[in-house]
Length: 395
Ligand code: SF4
Image 1 (cartoon, rainbow, N blue to C red):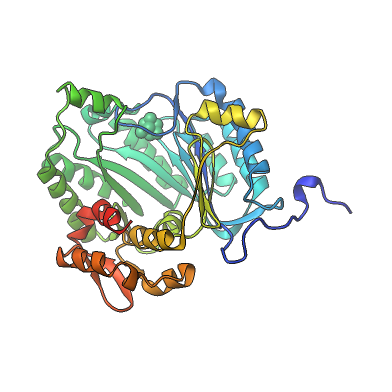
Image 2: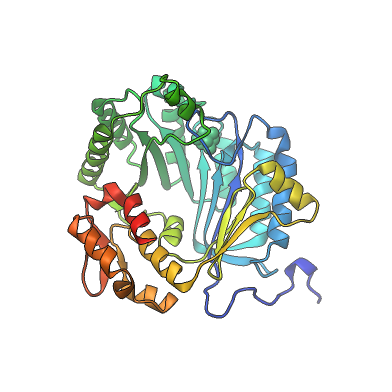
């Protein structure tokens, strides 16, 4: 019996000394509206483009350089965006079918999709379950209506609560995202938001401080004096409060911005933090395979057009030297509370980072941002507030 061309085994494109990627990310760029603080690669209010996007995505996955032509086994699969659940049920089915044909899941594969409270219908949740999706990452952000309006989110607090309750009925494993340090937000309101979240006992919570990114409405409004960025002191207080509050409620603070009940840590994100390879598809998506980082065109229009005309959607390629890779592994690994042992970095890069970064590590330890011994290095509770600065020092 001959196999169809798409099913024929092919030579693996993975170089011998690199593991095959077992994590895949799919970027779905559609949103109802661009939130005032968002600088992601998205297209707002253009769901008429979904069929074109799906055709381009199919082509990218089929012709991309990383995957052998057989279904590729993944341990984690993550559909992010954008708002993937903004697709209609029929479009979502098509997306899930494309991924089903191309990726082989095991019984333990973590399969996540990002969703917003509006548009996540019971029909879509059933469909997601039918295709093996077993984890929802829900963009809650806050439980205050006026703050949702300020962020330009397209859901109300009541819709948010309904969505969490519905997700709980359909999925054992789910995460909620919360944003703190909004202009004018008080510590009492932040405490209220965290307290509200506890009612639903989400297995996983991500908390992010609001950032002002160039090009966003928030950035412009701050420049014009229309928005006041929260004082750093209050932001730090809110971060510390959340860390303490969530730990007291049984969550492990396992990464700078992430908290989980035991066993519910995000395995997909752990791939990024531990420096293991991953593949990614869609506009702006970045893959890391064979020690090379390749990033797609950020504009969804350029990304689609290039795939339609048979051109590569890749906008940039960076090949890290072993030393750069060693430094990056150290910097990224330090985002995790458990820290990172030196040995795997040595095995992956040939560099002993204890020798390579001796001075930087000593300086960071002197500031009480990290601790280390002969075997490993870890971030301290104080250092969690300076994770970006630590990375900058090491890279
Ligand atoms: S829903 Fe998320 S991805 Fe979409 S515009 Fe808002 S913040 Fe950006």
